[in-house]
Length: 221
Image (tube, rainbow, N blue to C red):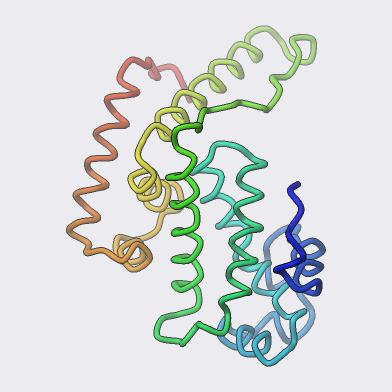
């Protein structure tokens, strides 16, 4: 994992980020009062000097930000690096949160913009690199092995097609079709009208369909 620059990040928040990765991302499992506090209440505590409370926000938002980052990059390590950057930026800008929207909307907009900026700057070098190892033939029956390979190939093709979209279109598809957010939620986070969003989503889906029309998925579960 890439090291965080401690020259710009307080050591306390570095420790929080490194030691508080959630196991299940279920905030309700926390036994302290922070488990029932609102996001905005946790923000107030952090701004007031209780830096360790930032771990609660980390637990609440880590999983979705990671899925977003992975969907945008296609690489686990790159996604993890983006997540770390997002939380560091959020911590540094926390005092700027004015409460004009929910903290979740503010935070996801920050995360979204950071992911988009990263992908725009890296787009020329972005290539799909499948790092997960395919299980060895000896571990599975031939038919099961064939099904696993075909499924993996299909997932790779779909992800490659997704990564070929422009970053903004890719983000819209991820937020709507993978994360399941409503049009209103996506429009709020991407700062656009629902009409514009619907048109861009339709365009993105059309492009994906064209890129995947060569696939025969009739026998794929």
